[in-house]
Length: 467
Image 1 (cartoon, rainbow, N blue to C red):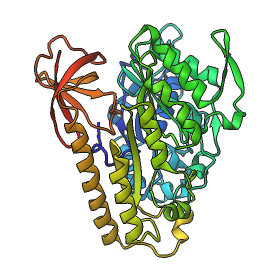
Image 2 (cartoon, helix red, strand yellow; image 1 turned 30 degrees about the vertical axis):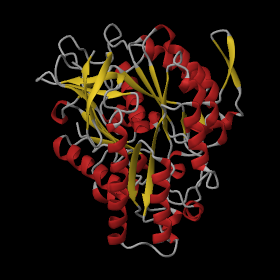
Image 3 (spheres, rainbow, N blue to C red; image 1 turned 60 degrees about the vertical axis):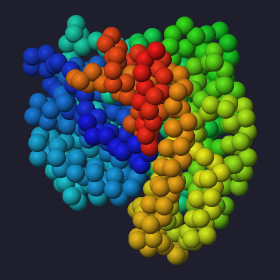
């Protein structure tokens, strides 16, 4: 599994593969899943459908009758990784079906890999299934091929991504995701809650709520209400978050919110995070992207005029333990040294807990490509270095302040040496830091939530002991 450096590439998930034990003669499909967690959920849904139709799932190219590559196409670097993965699958297997965001550019893919069997765009499940059926006809056994209620998962058993909507209504100039994934399409609230409840009942300890714009959830449905467990619940992020938080009343559960734009109604979520009886973690992943109002206007960012420092102060007043993570872009076209310095000064005041940063790059089809005054690569790199130095210093100071504190952590892995890799409530999987327990780990199990005392801190990670 390919992992990413913490705090550096926050919108990319690792390559994911999954396998089970196919029955004799059963057709098998391999899956390589690239890109963000939203794409990972798409991969899970595709594999769930295939498994229900009688296909086995293989983690080895040579053990599969065909391979699906779920691609990312947001940045040139992601496109290059996707093309590399397609080429690898072709060389090792020969039968390859391509889907995902880069699938919206079929000519681009076939220009490099003309031998792929089929190319489909993001969340086009039926087209992927049709392509699989053409390449490898199904052979279901109704007495064996039965699916658990939660379906196939590409994440560890103890956490799961919960996708609440597709698409996005924003028109940020540097982003082509609305062109690839369409406009906002929210799932009905009762469908989301039903899936979440099944996941919790199946043993999931952490739900990671994802979408392109979590704050806008339900807007396209005009916040219509549905019945859930005998009461009316709106398709609105506040109602949904409140209900998700109640799922944990009878079990250990963490609910983590990602991709939350800083709209005014976000303040309604903070009391839920401050309530110890609610499973919603005091954690907000908010893509600020920049601080200077002129840069934000050139980006065409939503809430560009928001007084974000005022909002951050209000959130912290309601919930002092809240963890704030964000991503930023440096070197955006037209960014001056004064505008970049504004961002550094803003960082000093905002004191965000978890921060990632991208150097701007053109993306085919993005309107920002046509903006004047593009920043030289050397200047982008120099600004990125300065930004990350600032972010690292803030992170190091914040983590040092946690030494001596008693906190809860969730166990993600225990290696052969008995060292447990855990996460605190302030850490999302793959994109944030870890807490390590390197002694007294006997009896620990993956997925357990345990209490530790922090006894050491680094730049991004913590160490602790069980109490």
